[in-house]
Length: 96
Image (tube, rainbow, N blue to C red; front, side, top):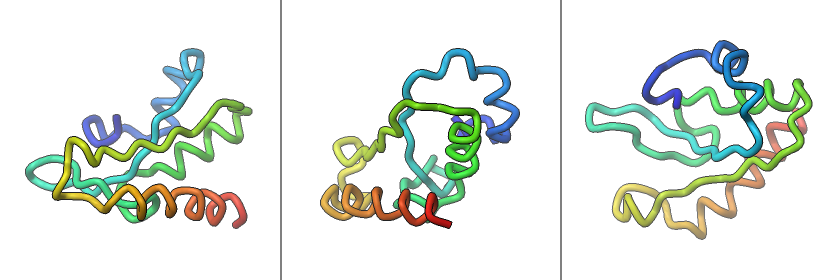
């Protein structure tokens, strides 16, 4: 959602918090032709800011990593790289 609206996660959270039961997360850098998907923490999306808000507010659901290789076959890393990187990035963030 941030790639379209650029709204701060805290602002969005206050509006939608009662409707959050599951998350789909990914990171990206913005380009003229749309988002260019990156490994977690390697893009511009304030994804960890959003995750921190959810965590601090007691969110108990899943953080479902979304990797759109089928829709962007030549533009993003192979799933073997992205899926292996995701838990490392999440553990590194939560262990700060």
